[in-house]
Length: 113
Length: 121
Image 1 (cartoon, rainbow over the protein chains, first blue to last red):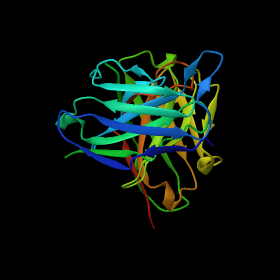
Image 2: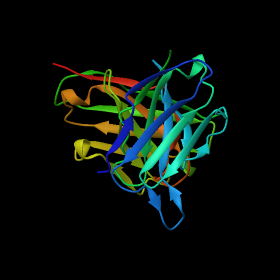
Image 3: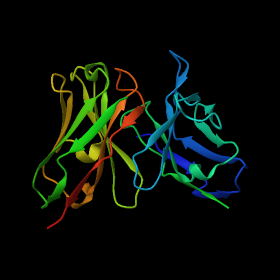
């Protein structure tokens, strides 16, 4: 199975500042046939289901604010939240869908400092 | 707007069975793969199973293989998860999620609110 790790476990950022979350996979998520990275990012707020933010590592889902961006390739990925808002307080998960079973990272808690 | 509504959760004794349902609306259900993902109390997300758009392919995490069966009825816009021989560690909120495309190798773009399954004697 592909193991997903995230860092940090949690972070507190001042409103308006940048939050950066890292995700690392134990194997490359880049499929050479289509040059796509099979990596998604989700946001989950307490008592709510996950919400898809980013797919194919860097494609923002429709309706997601442009302060959210994804980058990276292969085994190393980053979710960046520019200009953090109070509404962004949540747990963020990365997920690989390159290989079954599709595994999630352990999550990163983002809070306001 | 796509809506997914899960049902069928509850409290069940170890070794017993439960069937979850997920009714979809707002999209052409038969065009998309569908996932089940669970979340144990206070824990992270765990992918459980996926089924292709036409139901011909299904895949599972090892911990549920041979005990859980994912299926779908495209005429009823409904996804199922038959859970047999339930164990304490199956206690979780179970979410259904729509795949972004017909392929199972895709992220989940719409999620239901979840249904709670508690396995306890």
